[in-house]
Length: 92
Image (tube, rainbow, N blue to C red; front, side):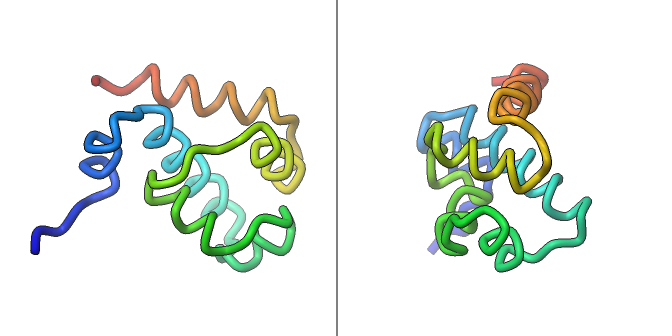
């Protein structure tokens, strides 16, 4: 069985925004030194969904963006903007 990397999975799913969200969330979480469990507690989003999101397997909802933004100390709009800029900076 072939190993599917985060970027490869997102290409298979056809969503560059998922890939961008995965990179941004992972970077923000690691910058703070948080585990997925800690982010789950702070955001109210289950750890398994965070794991799928960081692997590019889950599309964030507006509610997810709001909860994650609050956990990271920013608005949902600012978090979404970071994701869009990360996505725009990558070749498709």
